[in-house]
Length: 428
Image (cartoon, rainbow, N blue to C red; front, side, top):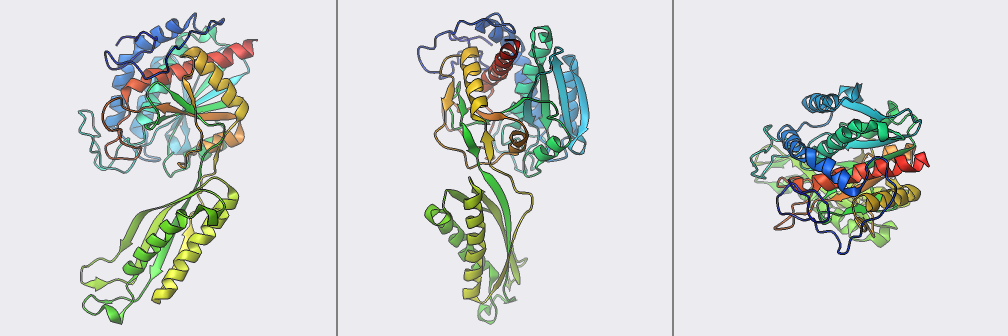
């Protein structure tokens, strides 16, 4: 593992992140690290073990509220660094560690822990060992980076003028673990909270940041269509709910493409259809399930009404009935505090390289339960570039997705730069 000429440590020998040209060093008085090279030497020293940890976590994905092996592994890693770990959050698999001095100022850094219900197709030699379970959203990378940064900070705790709280949260995927963790007090006395998420559409070496509304709200819907079952040889004697469901899916897609009618952008995705058990029987019912993503409460209300009306009108035309239900476990839009974005931008550009932070023009229509943290305290989610430099970069939630290990050093650098920037500001 060698630092490249810009000082960025890489997991792949000979690789250099695609950072902007003419990245000048910023000369400033730094307490936690004497220089930028000092910080990256600390990262280089632990990078091989961080890569191994990431791949170990990748082999053992666990879904929401089942992250017992993962929690034990993370607790062991933090304890090895001398960090006292508090466990038992969020049904038992959430955990929190802290390091730092006697300062009353606390900054929280959060990593999510859970995998997804996907059969992995990456073909890597560290692929998931659990059938139909996979780290397809990069949470293995998130945990490894935060563990690595935590170890470095713990060894330099005497230089900190703040307390750093490391939050490892289960059940980000559909479980709303973030809301539970916040309700259980993980943000007590915290002044700022940050999350770092791998983002395959952003170039390696960059960190994306969107001030204000940065990620969408998410609603989950279930549409049950009831027709009239009959023999497959005589479809005219019944009402086929599968045919109705096909028309409803098409209608929902048309609806999502017409943002003007919804007073704002919206994404409607159908991820599940189930109807019937036998090839020669037209069933009584078919169920459609999916998600709605919006950026404002006004668009959300309009879109929810439009989904229900679209399904009802189409079902009526076929002589079927329909029931549309929205899950109460909705995700709110994620709001990045502009002042915290400015502080994060300055800290990361100073710590890694000028123009490391990439200003994002538009919010993501994905959703994140880190929104519940940012409802309680100011902070921001940052998007770490994980794009492969050669070949195709599979998207998040793809069975071919694998977190790019070459992003681990930049991610740890972003965490350390944030802490350094906040610690120095609180000292002043």
